[in-house]
Every structure is written in structure tokens, then in C-alpha cells.
Length: 163
Length: 83
Image 1 (cartoon, rainbow over the protein chains, first blue to last red):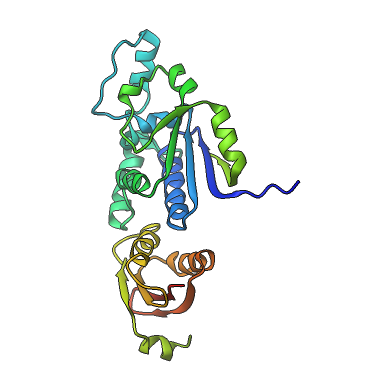
Image 2: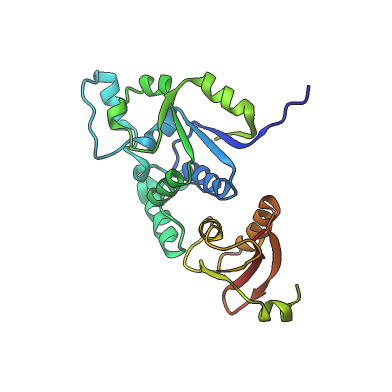
């Protein structure tokens, strides 16, 4: 039976590295610029990129507090997958980006929101790491769901990736 | 289009994306295309090499006509016609 796919990109992101998150956002923006619908599913370490450093979450148990302290507090605190050099790597990368006119992650997320890129947070891994909804960034139509939602959406997409 | 024809073309909209790197120029082009009429020519100025292949691909996907590119000093100009 002919199964025609939607002009849609689905990406499941488990990596929380700065370079990986940047790559996903840039490609998502390019896709959105070409009117391709983009649906991102943030899971595991990627959820760190969705933490809002200005927000606090209460009522965490000891393990959750540990996770909260050990994992990056948001997209501007992510490490590089290579040459992290104890944090010097990301600082240098951000400097280069500014110099060469590459948008910051803040700007990428803002544009993504404006262009209708959908972000779904994996509820299960979020709970595993003890993150609470109150500490997640504000993003248009942000939703929480399970793997089944990603698989169902991805099944309709012409492009399905995992990072 | 030939270089001579491109140099003489009437441009309805000029998008200067020289300050931004990928995906900036493509995003600027997308924003600008909504402001011009069907049949209008848009010019995109960019210093980012990727733009030279991005715009023709975007045109191919969206049905616009890719007209060509001109090399300038340190940047280039890409021309397209809105479908």
C-alpha cells in the first residue's frame, strides 16, 4: 500500500552536547525556512538544554537534586562533545560564532519558536532525571509526551533522525 | 541568466544578509519573499558560501525560479524570481 509521507522532519534528540543541539537547531531552521514542518523530541541529556536557569523547581528528592546540580542548567551551559577543555571549548566556540555572524542558541530557539518548530519533551526521561515542568523554558506550544507520540509523528514524516 | 543580464535586472527586493552565517541568509530570504509579488525578482546578498547552493535548492522546492549569482568583492549576489 502506498504510504505518502508528509513534508515533515522528525528528530529525536538524546544528546545534550552544545554542538549536537546547535546542529539540530540550525537544520531545523533551514527546514522551517523551506516550509517543512519540524517536530523535535527532546529526551535524556537533551532535556538539559531546555532548562531555564532563571526558574527554580522545588520538591526534589536527593537524587533529583544531584542530577539537577550535575547536569547543565540550560542551553548556554552545554559542553562540547569534543575539545570541551573544562569549559574553554564552548567559550571559544561562542566567540567564533559571534565573530562569524552565526546566531546564538538563544536566537536559534527564538527563531524556531517564531517559525513553528514544535518541541516535545519526553516526560519519562524528564522524570528520571528529576526535572520538573516549572524549570523548563517557555516555548510556544511546548508539550510533554511519550515515545509513542514521537513514533507516531515520525511515521508521518519524510525525514526521521536521531541525534 | 548571463552575467550581463543579471547586472541589468530590475530588482523588487534586495535582502542584505552579509552579516549573518547559515541559516541566516535563508531565513532572511524566507521572511522577504512574503513581501513581494508573484513574478518579482529578489536579490540576496551574502558572504556565506552555503547560500549559493541553499537558495537554488529552496527555489527548486518552493517552485520559484533561480536566476543565477554574481560574484562581488568578498560577497556575492543571488537572484531569484518569485513564482
